[in-house]
Length: 60
Image (cartoon, rainbow, N blue to C red; front, top):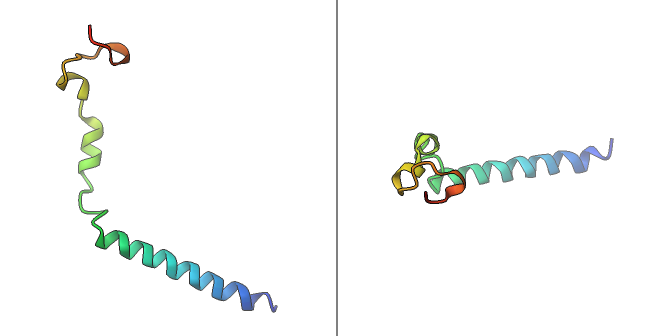
């Protein structure tokens, strides 16, 4: 039971640390553009820089 004297404050400190990290990420703007990254995955970069889908990124 004396181990709880160490585990409970450790758990509270880790929880507080996680909360502080989340609050920092909110203030830093990490969640401002939620749709941009999802749409960037769908964008076909091969067609924009003239490669026209050549395998391995080589020019035809």
